[in-house]
Image 1 (cartoon, one colour):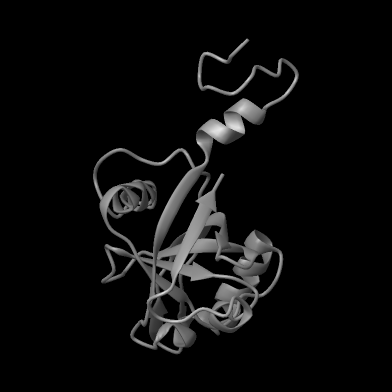
Image 2 (cartoon, one colour):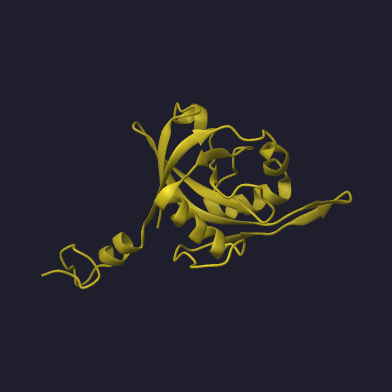
Length: 165
């Protein structure tokens, strides 16, 4: 017997079908950013919020993933959920990162989505971070508790996959 929502065998007492159906995959290529994320990521106010979302402090930087095609459409749904774009929102749960002011400088808010990033060799728990003020509309910014480039042994041009549930 099959579930009406997907092609997996029906498991009456399990939510497996809903999890599989709801998962979102975004694939892209590692790319260099502007090198400024550490200024924001190292702020204590943000780090305390990251701890509550990813369970640990985040590495003070982001991994940039360039996306296109159907994966860009999936990412745009996350941007809609974050309030940056109009259109169809994502069904993925979002987590709000509150902005703050420090010494007359305003640090904006962001929206985070829990995920797992995969390379050919390793899977790492992470989050996609979408700042309220960003120039990126086709670049996914990923945070984790480790320096992803080193931990995953990846560099510019390498393909990665991000799965959100």
